[in-house]
Image 1 (cartoon, one colour):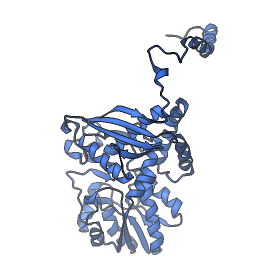
Image 2 (cartoon, one colour):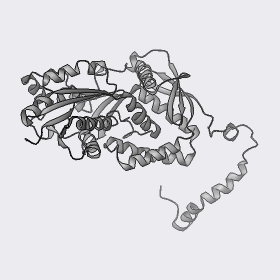
Image 3 (cartoon, helix red, strand yellow):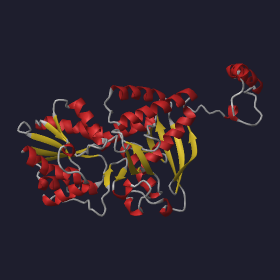
Image 4 (cartoon, helix red, strand yellow):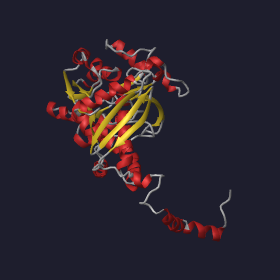
Length: 404
């Protein structure tokens, strides 16, 4: 234990990371540097964090504002990729961990620390996301993962430990959700949600209005894109951070972005999570609709296949893997002409496309029309169908018709 002199802890002020400070002090007799990242989780999560960390035993505290980098270099990349994990999850927690972990290693170098610590459990995905990033940026530093070495086995145990060590916490035995929030989303796990048959309780949701309570009149938004990147809202240019924040507010007021998902964790087990991603849901929908009129058929279809692999890389914590960087080059190539505007109708939790336009649109009314046209010779379809169906025709002649 004596070889650990100083540890940089990824600190959120939540239950797990709060009790880790006294644990590290007791077990390793080391200095603890608590580091928190502002990635848009809100003032309620950040206010008083430095004081709480020091009162809990931290020797030093850092708070870095990473919101700008989070939006521009992380969130906008997954939007361009249309990366969605297992049909529903917009990767809110997954995409944030590599950024947080990277700057944890930066602080470790500044402080001359010899160890890194996190509060991720041995069952979860986040331990992998943090530690794969450590391997890229600080491969020689020792990694301390208390959940893999202490005797605490449940959140109830963690609450008892906190009380014994006078650590202030918000979690209670009655309302014991595990939450993770940032600019992109807010996740809810644990408690009653561990039974997938149970419907989430209305008071669990924090960011979004219920669809039932949303306005009775639809809200329209117009989102402008340039090369796959959102740049404007309702005709006004906005900074990346401001644009996401504005869409979060608009989406939340209209009950947009609630997702209930039983997902396959990286470690193999299934878990249930409920997510609130209002602005992100709007941006994904808008970007997808613009691609529908701009990308050619083969590129669009192949991009959907690549997007699934991209989402898996993000979910599995492989953000800094060479493959993700290579896939970004492909995504950037597909986005060269993804410039235009999409109009969406938001109404009681639903999003409906109300219009899309682009100077690079491949949609041509003279080709798609059902009215009289002079552009497309419909007689030519006969030969095309004969050639396309030749192998099927021969197979049927030789082997007979398929069984019903």
